[in-house]
Image (cartoon, rainbow, N blue to C red; front, side):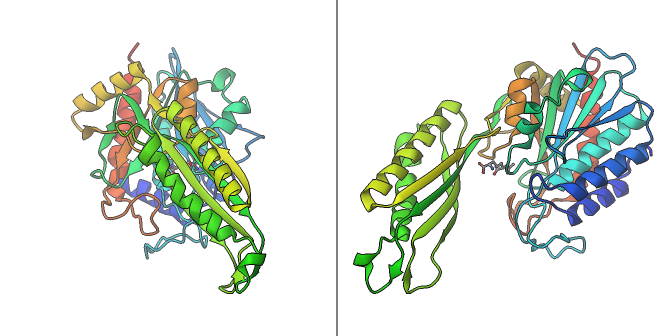
Length: 385
Ligand SMILES: CC(=O)N[C@@H](CCC[C@H](N)C(=O)O)C(=O)O
């Protein structure tokens, strides 16, 4: 297989879009990628599996005169979202959708891989097809399993995320912090259920959980430096079964976000204090789990990022923009703590819909320029110190 045409890239993306899978369950997606890699029939390519994280895949290309190994990571998981795009190639998996565009990410990675499988690179290249970016921090799991060792150790790491607010094909990034660090909140309040008519004999978990929801809003308003910013979002609130039964338990899930690790830790502490305070005030039990995993702030490395920005600004065919940081999270932040590198946005021109929306529909016109910009940069990087 040679370099992929725009039609090839679109066909790959649509095939992947049909088979979205949740974190750590990316079985069909991994099989698709492996079959694609096999079809490349490339003499300088080798593959590595990671038994501790079975849906992960590492693909290495041997360089002609390697001085180092350049890593390129793509995430491969999807979200528990019921697709509402109405597209003819919509998800075949009920309740699961590539609502964050990881189908686009995989396609760009395969486009880059196909190019270098047809044109042997000077430096070694390592492609990391990473499970579990949306949850379960697959990048950290694969790192902790010792997979990036020996010939599979990258000297630098690069990655991309699609962005519906930017024009199709535009590459965008910044020096320093690009994305926030995050922490998942999982909290259950347990009180005592009972008849709606006799609240004095029960202990209503919904009232306690509602107080928690309101009190955590003060963290960003009163504890975070407003110049630096932060987010506390509760995305789920599940309690009760029927209107005339007092709920004995209430479960909340959410996320904490900030650009600095110290702010994240302060916000974690405030969430803990408020959960304990609500439990004491309402006489309920609070079971709280806070999970940061690998979702560290995404810190672009100075040297590699300066070089990437310089390249993208001067490459005639690349549309490049420097952008402000965003409160999205990415466990690529963990990998950037281990290896220097850069994360970029790829514009996919769907300004009416946000990432994670059920009708998010990236513009496929982004695929070809996305592959071209990254291939160009990696080739350039192979000539740089
Ligand atoms: C790019 C993107 O949307 N990433 C996810 C990362 C999730 C982090 C973690 N599961 C959490 O919810 O805190 C995001 O939601 O930003």
